[in-house]
Length: 377
Image 1 (tube, rainbow, N blue to C red):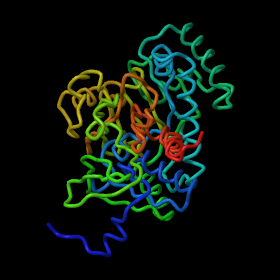
Image 2: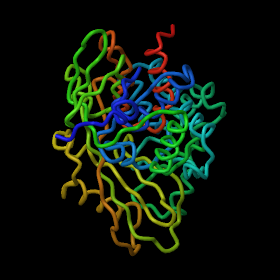
Image 3: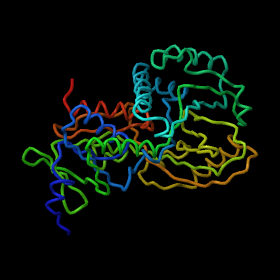
Image 4: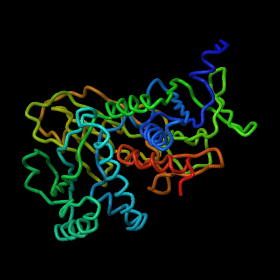
């Protein structure tokens, strides 16, 4: 055991007003809003990995708020009022990201979003588009948030697709650059970030929290905010959060790639985008839901082979390419789609369960978490 120096005890590891577990998007936005509300707060973010480990830097980089069929499914599951609230949170979050950072800082590109449908009744589809355009107008300010644009299917080169729904309100960004920009921002606000430290438990001692770690020392805080999303139950096993692995692959550059934008298929279970002149494709988790309910950040033949089939048969038929990158990230789901932002007890709070929409939800979730810790009404 290497003892800490007095300098370390009184700087990096000094007692904090608030310790945030997890340096992903929600943890960083929470620190940002806490500092804006109370600049004198001593805040420490503790990250178990060298960089955010989970979904924040391992997602597909979609700046989206939900495809039409996904929102229809959400409304059926949670009711229309909650679906609208969730979409508003996502849409506001995306706007706040672009208000806080320049497009160049986060690699934002506004090519729009699309949904691909292999089979749908044209009249029912147009009716649903009209209905949701009326519903979402007060959120997006657009007369037509969704538009049917089947004429683009051939132009994009897709096969087996009968309908294409366009949403100009969506875009794409660089997840790593967004996390880096947020990290630099909160550090400039005097937030301490400690990496490679995992909080393994906590106990209340003399009115404060003693946070146990895998390192040979503990941390002291007045409050703890858990923002580890899919991994939250490792510290708070009572939470309604279930891990869900999302696997991704990226192709080599494709000659004359005919599309730009973010694309959804099968209620969002499949998703792809251009990455310059490469294609990033992820999803197919619904083929093996039980196996993909895991925190193991590995890839599997079952999912990767299905992604390759979809890429070969639907997205890039007849094109030449190789698969250059593969990875996975872990999302946090639950019995409800709404984020879980709540008090566990008087000293411990959580902001988790982003349901695969952490990029869009994190700014609003972080602001709500900050208000909860500060006791705002």
